[in-house]
Image 1 (cartoon, one colour):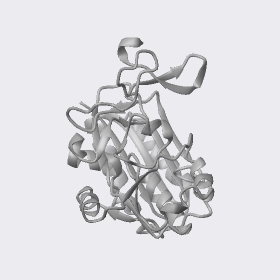
Image 2: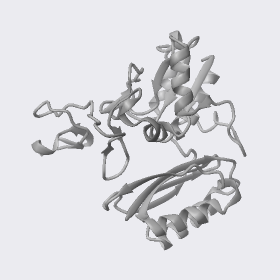
Image 3: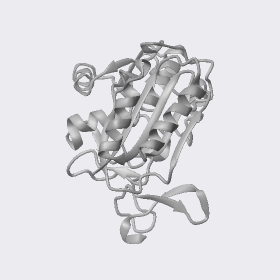
Image 4: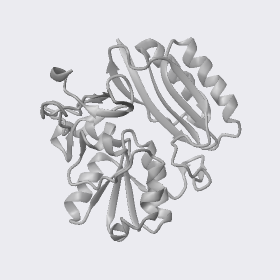
Length: 276
């Protein structure tokens, strides 16, 4: 059985290059594929391999004290998730383009949103009638699945969020409870801190992201559609009976299947299995 793991840790790292070399060595030694990014702010990883090998990698990574608290999210896969192994050191583990704005300590991001468990998200929605879900992903990810009624910024890359926030388009949300969300939580760690620094007064983030929410509620909660993932699967169901919100560009049927546009291989388009 093959497993894919997704995790991140925000913590100060004095020598990201040394961590990069170590992470490459242990991931490669266990035959894993996927992506790892290391910076002075921490680590962000998505890796796949045989279950035993992945377990040994996770055990070794958690054996390094700054990464001991890593919240590892597991999913079952069947091969072909990633073409190879990439382990890089960069200025940010998530590229918002503002590494100087992010501050971290051994407990994580400083000044970020309040973490809510999936159950606490439901409690907030039940007790407040002005809760706003704010999508922290790229717009094409939200096209196949999102929280019901969510605000979906028109962004192509994570770098676009700073300009969106600074544009004033969302200033009307600054006095509302805003729940940010993303796939596994890492982007919201930064996004919620950027929002708080820009005057949003009540900012939350879903602990563990959509992945943890889906584990709790599946398709029976506040989430509609499929979840986009950054590997060969492209999208996954969050629970039984999941129906993607995406629409096939050729026949109009529901789909969460993205393929490269034949006219521009940098652009993804929705095409169902039946249409190719």
